[in-house]
Structure formats: structure tokens, C-alpha cells
Length: 173
Image 1: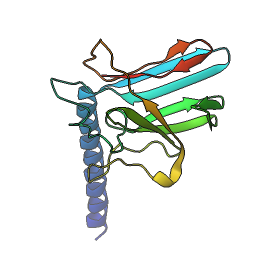
Image 2: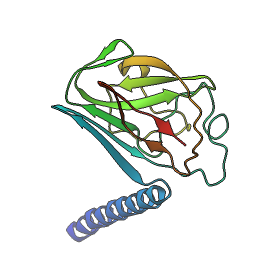
Image 3: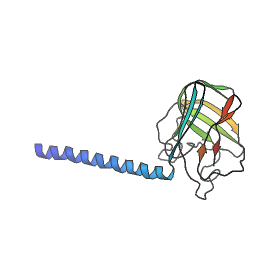
Image 4: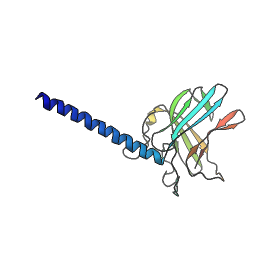
């Protein structure tokens, strides 16, 4: 009886280990299509950082098609996008306290809603392919107008641009 019990425990450990390896390999494969990107902005003692996954267009129509208008988007691919600030910020006249957040967006044709949520570390979508966000944990939401650019980007890009005493965080595709 002891030998069978030991074999069963070892068998379970092997199965769990194999499942973990398969899950990890699937994550690596998924991330090869939308690799991680990090963008950092520093000015004096202010540091902003965004960690996100950067999907490619691959000839697809993105906004209004693959990413529907007026629905919450994880603002990238794979895990939910993470935004960090070491100082309190004023965003469109609203205060965002220093900390780590997930960054969600609701794309629209004329404007986007930008949402900062206190939960982080989760995969960007749930099993129903919906945004994996708990709205009760939203800490700040602002609306911003869209601007058309002449330059088209093949890969989703978040950047920071210094504008006078302020900084902007454009999303480009």
C-alpha cells in the first residue's frame, strides 16, 4: 500500500509539473506574437513606467474591428498593462496617487476613456474573452480626444512625450 501511495503522489507531482511547463510554453508562444515592452519617463524625481505587450497589426483593422469601439480593452495583449508612478499625478485635472495600476481603455472613434485600476497582475481577458477588470477597483477614469497621425505603426506602441512642464502618453498603431 505504501508503494502505491508513493507512486500516486509522485505521479501527481509529475502531472502538475508537466502542466506548468505546457502553460509556460504557451505563454512564451503567445508572447512571441506580442512581445513585452517597457517605456519609462523620468523628470527630476518623477518616474513613470508602463509595462505592456505589443501586438502587431499584420494587415488587420484594429480599432472598430479586432478591438471593438466602446468596449473595455486591456490596452495591449496578454497580461493587463501595468502603469506605475512614484509620485501623485494630475491627469486631466484629476488626482492619481503614487502606486501601481492596471491601465485599461475604452477606444472610441473620436475619444478614448483611460481607466486606472488598483488590481494588477492578472491576465488581460477572462474565459469569455472580456476584459479581466473589476470596475469596483477603478481609481481614476478620464476621457481624451483622439488625434490622427500621419505615421502608421505596425506594432502597438505606448510612449511618453515631454510637452512643456507636462508629459503626454500617446498610444500609436
